[in-house]
Amino acid sequence: MINMTLPKKVTIVEVGARDGLQNEPKLIDTQTKIEFINRLSDTGLAVIEATSLVNPAWVPQLADAEEVFRSITRHEDIVYPVLVPNLYGMERAVAMGVKTVAIFTSASEAFNQRNINCSIDESFERFKPAIELARSNDIKVRGYLSCVMGCPYQGKVDVHIVTTLAERLYQLGCYEISLGDTIGIGTPLQAQQLITEVGKQVALEHLAIHFHDTRGQALANILACLQLGVSVVDASVAGLGGCPYASGASGNVATEDLVYMLHGMGISTHIDLEKLLEAGTFICQKLGRENQSKLGRISIQ
Ligand code: HMG
Ligand code: MG
Image (cartoon, rainbow, N blue to C red):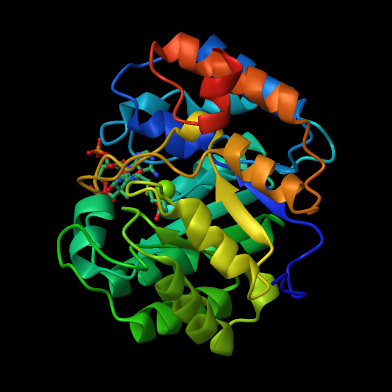
């Protein structure tokens, strides 16, 4: 039965250049990153996460953030968020002329300690001055909440904790909260329960989903959330992605496969699938790795 609440249009937040490249063992050169993002900019994507302003000792893969951001051809109608963990990151963002950032914390204490070296409460303390600086520079702030369906270190994560933290991020000034299944452990009914609970405190139009595909559940989980009215979905071309500090985390849902599913259901994305496939093939060739997108594999056979 076709559920009439499916959105007519979905906004895809492409995270391959950040979530994807941060997790690649092979360091790739700055010029390749620039060309990758420029190719993504020609696909019709509206939001392309460009890089990350974290400590380069923690994520050497994105140590060239400033140069990448400065050198890409930025389109007026595309948003290019960058990941920011603290005030220092926000100062770097201001100096670079970034217009949108994404702060990030976790619904799991154990994961947060490993990922950003502080507790959940401490992360909110760090965000306060960072957000003040963002506000005084007209920088929009998105918020990520990770491990929303389970944690590699502490196991179960209580959906009520997720709800409270999502609301805290919203109250702090995040225009959108992206709920991350960092290790791809959730299944569709759990995803629906998550959206139902969080949606009681944060309106659906301020929620996004960010599902890694570790156990092959991402598309099913996304469809389950679309049926509840979610209309912003993070994805990564060629299924790149993972977090170096989440053991067992593998790629995000592949943008190509997501676009194929959405278009097949009559949901608009404004994305040119052929160009997207070319961008996926390009980056996989540069990385010397297999394309994790099902569609990408078919297209190169
Ligand atoms: P810390 O050690 O607690 O930071 O790290 P600190 O404030 O004590 O500073 C220590 C050193 O870091 C200092 O340098 C600072 O200058 C430097 P030193 O004096 O030793 O030379 N530093 C920085 N350098 C550059 N940029 C900065 C910055 N801040 C401090 N912004 C910190 C805290 C957050 C910095 C560190 O833990 C870190 O960089 N972590 C990176 C974590 C990360 O990037 N993880 C992957 C992204 S999260 C993810 O993938 C999940 C997501 O996709 C959603 C999902 O899948 O669910 C978003
Ligand atoms: Mg992620």
